[in-house]
Structures are given as structure tokens and as C-alpha cells.
Length: 145
Image 1 (tube, rainbow, N blue to C red):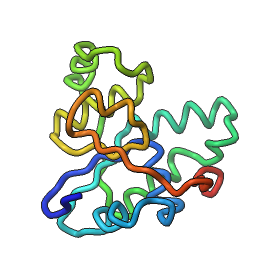
Image 2 (tube, helix red, strand yellow):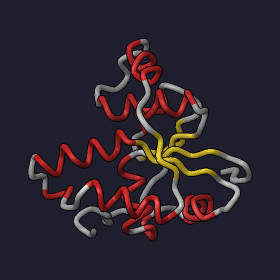
Image 3 (cartoon, one colour):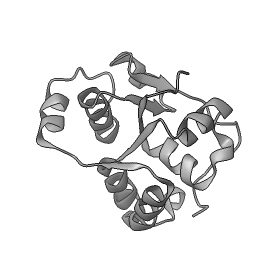
């Protein structure tokens, strides 16, 4: 992956891994996230997703969105708010993927533009800006915060 001067948007799973258990990410991903020339974004949509799953009592989301928000800012990541134009873009997207959070992240990545780092290969059908990564098998960052 090219890292110099790049902009990166993290999907929710990659955000959690980067903040809670970065060693499960590929080494090149860890390096680009630490590169001072890179701009790393996290979306308010990811915090919303974490909040919903936490409020539903999902064991895999056993942390508060405000804790993830604070940690992301402390790490030097840049918050990306949800804007009206992101919603308009989602309305025009093909239905390759049904997850509303992932669809919004694709729209946000296209609007910046930035590469979207994700573990979800289905999102690659939308744009060349989607970069799928694999986390180390058998490792999970959730329930660690």
C-alpha cells in the first residue's frame, strides 16, 4: 500500500482493531496508520454503529462509543461527520451491500476522497477506493476496551 500523502477512512472493525488491538492488523496497515504524512479518518457513523450495537447488548461491542471517540482523537485520527451529501450518495448507490453503515462509509470515502480500509470484501464492488485488509485469524479486538 502506498502511504505517503494518502487519506484513509477506517471502517468500524478496522477502527476498533487500530485502537484496541493493532497487532492483529497487517504490518503495512499498522505502518500507514502511524505515518505522520497520512490523514486517518474515523466516521461518526462508526460511533453510531458502536452505540447501537452496545445498546442492544451485543457482547462483541462491550465498550462505549464515547470511549472509542476519545481514544481515536487521542491517537491522532480525524473525525468525519455525517453530511447531507453523504446521504444523497447512498441513495444513488447500487445494492451490492445491505449494511447501512458500510454503505455510508463508502459514500464518505468517495466524497473526501480517501481509501476505505475494511475487512469486508463485498465493499470492493463499489469503488477502487475500497482497500480490503485481513486481520490475523483467530484474533478479535472486541471486548478488549
